[in-house]
Length: 275
Image (tube, rainbow, N blue to C red; front, side):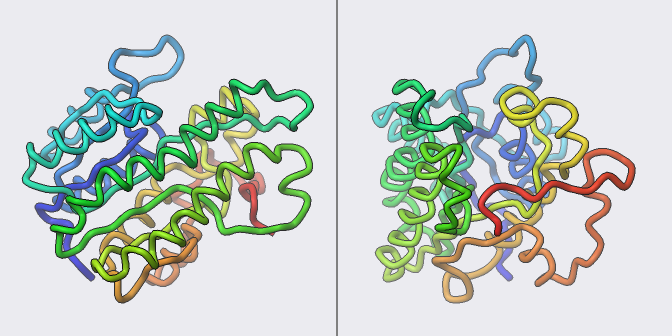
């Protein structure tokens, strides 16, 4: 396992939810963390900004750099990644965590909503990875990790929300390609997806409300799995679409109850795309 001490991790969508949890988990391992997201000022409903997460990291004794970033803006992506690399002396890992979700079929989905999902999901993996590549080449432990699922062609995952499905699968397919393309540079490229629903603001406000929240796990399970992946070498692990629970089981974890969002024995909901 490779230490994350003094390594720089750049996280998109890092102001709340899974991104925030990964940022804090990396900081606890000694990483310097770049929190890149659109949320520069407080949202009336959703807690957390790039600045509050940076403050949390500093309270842990870590180093943090909050940067305003819209992953749809390719010029801004390059500027922010270069700014972060110049600030910390390089970039060792890119976490493509920013995401957009609309669980709607083709008939009802607006073109603007499809464009948003494509730009924030699939296209951002391309633009962020391309911008980070010169810096990752300079690292002795370069890694790209995207929050996207294993690919299942079961029609059930296309029937009700084909547009969203295709943008998430595109993230995974692009990652598989980059794993082979960047192998010669020693850069690992992997994907991570949760076994169960993760209880975040996106679930509460975009998908199913508080009832679904009680049937999910805390974002910390994804964060712990992400840290485990980032701690492995490219020779050990690249080109894989991994499940959080499977990653942690490989590390010897057997009890996952402390990750449950709500107390009780209500059955946990499997996440999308897992047959």
